[in-house]
Image 1 (cartoon, rainbow, N blue to C red):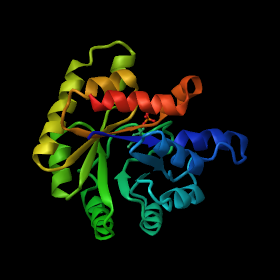
Image 2: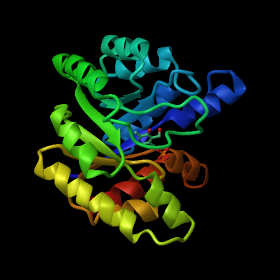
Image 3: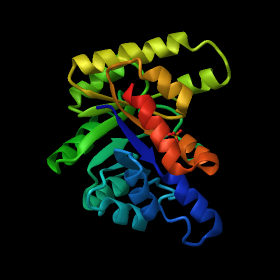
Length: 239
Ligand code: PXP
């Protein structure tokens, strides 16, 4: 069964816009699971622009909710994550000025650092994923690092599709990368910028086991409601 992870960071963005308590990301985490999501994703950013430490602690403490915590390689955040103990970790690059995660990790440059971090998470029995660009070299390095999963950055594909440009070579790159990772026994996830159309496109790649989607789900829910949007995506993913 293919899985849907719902990123609820932007529930916190909305709450923070008022500086009050509503809408509550903890409540959102329980709700998205009740609507059919397989897991909840939150990104504890170094600048805490959406999810904060208290949110992360409470959400990761929920029983019967699988939580995927996205973090950078920052030492303080890594130690925090080890204390909070989410079910899953996804290591992502972070750049102060970015609006959202702009690309995959530079694995080659951070090989030693990543090796140490992954060992810590694996010792704590936390499934560990690396957010990477669809590149065969990075996938081979992810294997060397003993990562459980990779999440392929689908932002470039999403941008090409949205701007009606030719996306076939990018889709092909994702397909080849997913196949290679799968053949190396690395579980394949996909995420960033996905909506109904691009998710449907990616379901043709049988190696992708999990989709992590945030901004589109929260935005579309304003019009159609969270329950309906999650159910629509689950239906697409099941095909
Ligand atoms: N996966 C990862 C690793 C991400 O960093 C993000 C953005 O935080 C997403 C998925 C979700 O992206 P979007 O909000 O564009 O759906």
